[in-house]
Image (cartoon, rainbow over all chains, first blue to last red; front, top):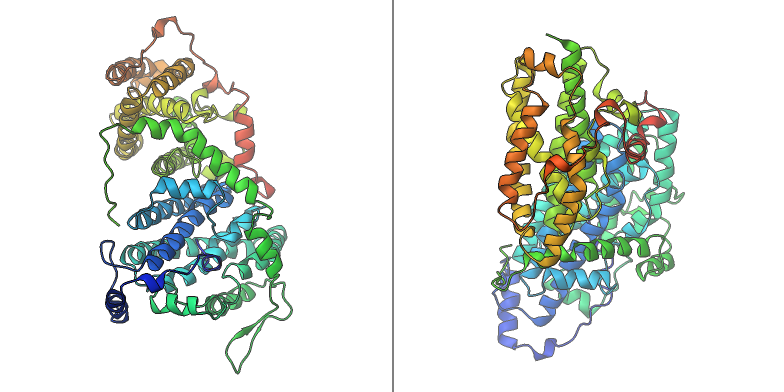
Length: 328
Length: 251
């Protein structure tokens, strides 16, 4: 699960003038023709840097995202939910594995990436800095956060970097099952007892703000963004993704008889675009920079897991071990 | 067919699978490497699925629905061996438990493929195929970590010594041992234990780990009759936390 909103904020964009103009032109022509760029192909440094950053953040989002949902595996009500949620969260960890491999094709090792995560140098999807208080929160995540991620990931799957696109194709196929599972859970809450309905409505009220944040702030139109779009690193604007999500899911939420905590939310019949109250972007910045309800907890859990597993990883290493280029 | 004896056997196996599956699932997001998160989750899904199939068999013998049985009992109504309920601890303990327990259950289901109770023999064949991968996983890791670094060997040795008395509790004799054997439902805990000792000895002999003299250890019995460690009740409460909000509701 991943939102695109935090990827394009702080990577420095420089050095393009040092690239070989002829190679750069050939590279851009290949992308223009719809070809995929593969690990051993020539690519501008900036392209490589941006992709590492993006794929790495995506991978981190998968393992951090496994935490708020993972806590509900041991509480899932009944065999059907328990088995499905285990499989779902396992998929998310599997996505991290795929994505770290895809990023490794660009030269940064999984260990370096995880070190950067636990040292707070690397971001992950902001939505996982919020707590999943009840079972209904986990239902919201499985349905709607995964739905948002699919919107984002389907766009990115049309991008230019081969290993990332292939990973995303597989990820999206799995996420579509998560979406069905999540929707199924929410339908049961909606058609269940008054208590269940109330739990679900409260979860929607809690998660709507973070969900609107999920796609990131409106894009600044900059040279930077234009180049990334030309290179097919960024495939859709944050607002486009958000609008697509609203278009697909607001009617479904309303159909189940739930309300959405935004009185201004409506589709403009003329522009066919959704109008809404801007979410609190100051809160978004605060949370993404570390001051959210669960940032410290999430990283602490990850840090403890890394620390406790160190002896295992060391025991697996022998002097004969050679680095193998991952096949992504 | 002695149905009381059969049910007693099915309950303890179903409860074992559910509780160890639940514990395995707690590794999700916490493993020493991503591949192990994924492996423990796969095994958890198999084991919880197997427990469901066994509860389903009990249901066909007149017991309550699987969800009711699994999510509404208290700790003293569970018949799992106490080894399965112990907290995961560090990876070394989880791995050792996984090795000791899964080796025993692999043999248990092998034996049950010959059961005179046909539905159980049939289910055992299916389960046996799944568990083969669990023991392959356990053996690979025990061999690797059991002879890698000083730290890994020491950790595994300490956990082995800690887990063994509980592992011997797997074989706590049933009050219906004679009936089960006489009717050909199950070959019995003693046969299982002997085979288990020879199989774990074979694997451990390929590592730097030392198997203590098992005859000097006092088995931790009690689980099969509902006398559990202090760790089971909190597990059961957590597992049924949502279900108990409204046991009549559909979730």
